Image 1 (cartoon, rainbow, N blue to C red):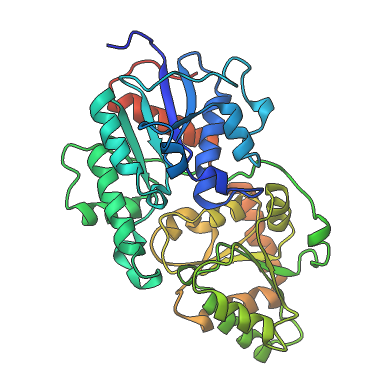
Image 2 (tube, one colour):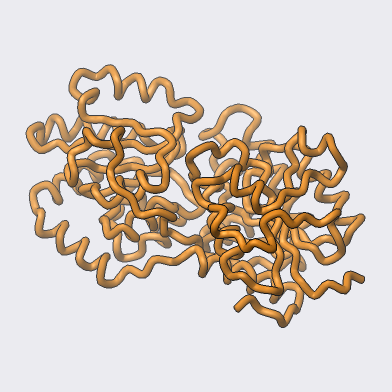
Length: 401
């Protein structure tokens, strides 16, 4: 029995070397929660990383253990060296031990050896494995993904569920989807945590953003792929050009060019009218993303299905109205502060945009209500919810203060 009273938490950081200079989506979730747990500076918690990349497993069957200093170099857009307590920067245990917690907060499906390695480590060391299910879209809507991915994704999620306790979800919608996916959770504890929405750095326009007109563009944040439904925006901007050609706002798409995006990008780039109205920005820094939100006229999120919808919450946190799809978890995120439309109805979204073009006071009123009444959820609150879930599931009485 391990005598050390500390809770040792190992974040699965397998995906972080691919982060580069920008942190988006699941990588943002991993690093933001890690950062806030580190910032709690609790003497009852030690934080490390563990990687199950093929090259990291080659050196040993348990995966490669990472110190916080190494993590800060891999994900330097969020975790900065001065955030790390000196006594934890380079500390690294010799091995995993009984009662240690491995946090799997996403993207395990990218690394095939993760599941068998975790299962073997759990049996050998009596580890606790805790997983966050972001969404089950590949299970419910496999047509939105490339061949083979839905099967690999759902197999990975089923495997994680089998070895994890508690299982965390990010919305009531995902919790309902999980119940359909597995039938019932059996003796598993399913806990909902709310994702944070604040960006790490306040920013201003950089040189590559300098051509954007402040306050005269619509911002859409999300990787360019079929599920995010950028095709709807193509139809909407064609309608806007036909109906209000002199008022048509610029569209700024922020996100990586993902699977099956080439045709859509070609259309945007080669339509004589749209090519000058659409800007695509890949890999923004946190400072750039913050500036893009705060200087937008409004934002739009036309996704077909989401487990949560970080860009909606980020938009509201910046005081900006979001025109959001009305499906899945997105109304949970936006509540009464968003305007909603069907992601299959370009006319409805076009009408909403024209409404605010014609009535600036209505937009000002909506923004005022957001600034006065919307309460952003912080990543620190998310971290505390996660730690509470760990404590409750293991009947631990110690709490991080």
